[in-house]
Length: 184
Length: 217
Image (tube, rainbow over all chains, first blue to last red; front, top):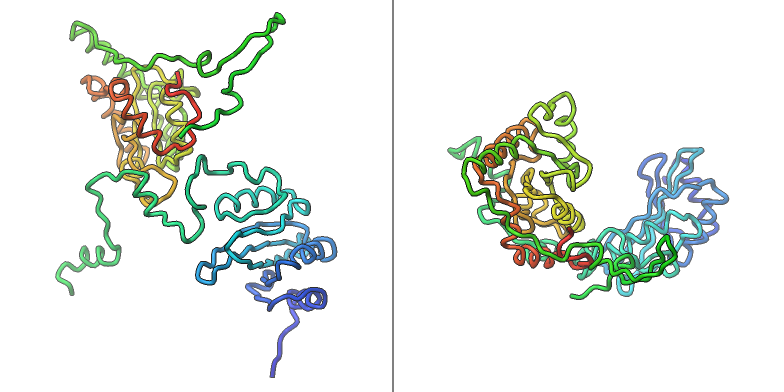
């Protein structure tokens, strides 16, 4: 028997599913859900949520690098200030020549997030204001550092010199040695 | 790697208040072209000792916090630990300070500002590195954007260990710095002048968008 409580989140999801080809709903908390959206339907879904469902606040826009699947994922987290509920829209798209539609005209703050994502992940948002200006890094000359194929240790070794004499201990082994030197 | 100069550093025509137009070349007109020079001590040892005593009792810290360690300076400059009773005070600008405390990790971006601040300070000047980040990178040892050894980029007179060092450790460190200065061993500014080329090449190796004069004085 498939008995599911109709929570407000699930209710919203059902309503949205009539309009857009959405994925399954992941309910993290009663007031927080995540749902996958095809890239082509992102903008209408965001607009619908903003103008019809009261999700007027863009909380954050962040990216995940699914290197093994060769995908980038963007998460648009929206908040409904009246009901106190959040919904996250997940969009996946290929890593090669990564680009996504800009939403700076829906939420002006998105432009700042998009600048950061362009710099740290190399995701292009055509039309976003000041997108190609430096955001945090200055004079960066390698692949974007938040991409998972960027080897930060190798970069640090090549660019910054070590001071000899630095020791590294595995915390577990080290504490074992300290507390039980006999190996008990 | 040659960088295109920022707009404010490019040669431009400026109209003065008297209506006369003249050309400004910021890198030549706004900055000193002369490189730092070694300042020799006084001829008589007793005079130099007196100078060093005076220098040791006159530490003015530049209020420039670079990492999390800056948080330890707040209790230090307020009544809880009250560094002022040791004759140590904070100043808002590099021109008025002679002690630069690098308080924690330095990202490459901040390093650029720290170098500018250090070069703008007047000799004799001292640098103190706080915490393991300035010594060997600390917990940022594998970070793509923070330097690991502060003394590659500016002359450090004293390191204070800890992550972060407590205000008490800082006070003890400042007392040690006073001893170094009094003994005439805090010669960081002269070291910087002597090995200027070496410091500059290290700095330029990590700061890829070098768009300022070589010596910011």
